[in-house]
Each structure stands twice: as C-alpha cells, then as structure tokens.
Image (cartoon, rainbow, N blue to C red; front, side, top):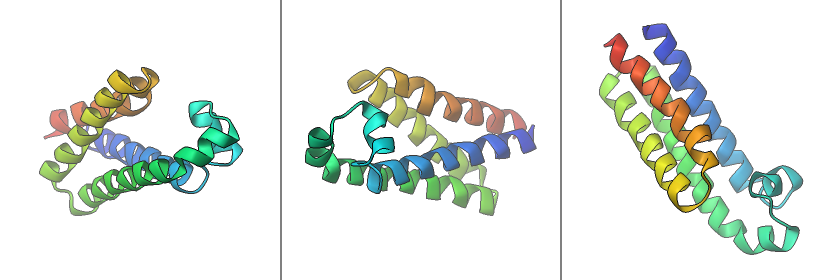
Length: 117
C-alpha cells in the first residue's frame, strides 16, 4: 500500500505542476483557454489572477514532492488535505468538475497513505 500511496501522491503533484503551467504560462493560449472555456478577451483580463492561482498550485506540488523526498507522512497528509480543501472549495464556488479532477485524486492518495501508515 505504501508504493500505491507514493504513486498516487506523485500523480497529484504532477497534476498540480500541470495546473501551474496551464495557469501561469498557457492561460491566454488555446490549452489554457479550454481549461475554463474562455474567449481570448476574458483570458487576457484574468491572466494575472490565473497566474496567481497557478503559483499556489505550484506550492501544493512542491509540498507533495517534498513529502515524497523526505518520506514524512505528516507533510504528505498536510498537503493532500490542502489539495482536498482547495478542490472542495473550488467545486463549491467555481466548477463542480474540480471535485473530481482535484479533490478526488488527492482523497485517494490520502486514503492510501493513511492505510499504509
């Protein structure tokens, strides 16, 4: 179960690194605009906000990678819970899809990590 937890946590970290790239660097390009179905004008107006959001996703990815490098279960649990909270909040306030895309994988990783402990 430990290996499964590490793989799932790594996948969540990779997903958030991908979000960082989409939101910080590709927001005004077709891949970034497709993320939220935005036209070029709206993407241009919201690019600074998206970049800030991407930076936070990068911090989540960094924390998860840190937990994998150090093997610290407490750090792993903390950052997975942060991802879940962000996903639940995003689903409640922005788009229901975020619950499945962000909170779901983190919840699976958290469950695996706790079962492996």
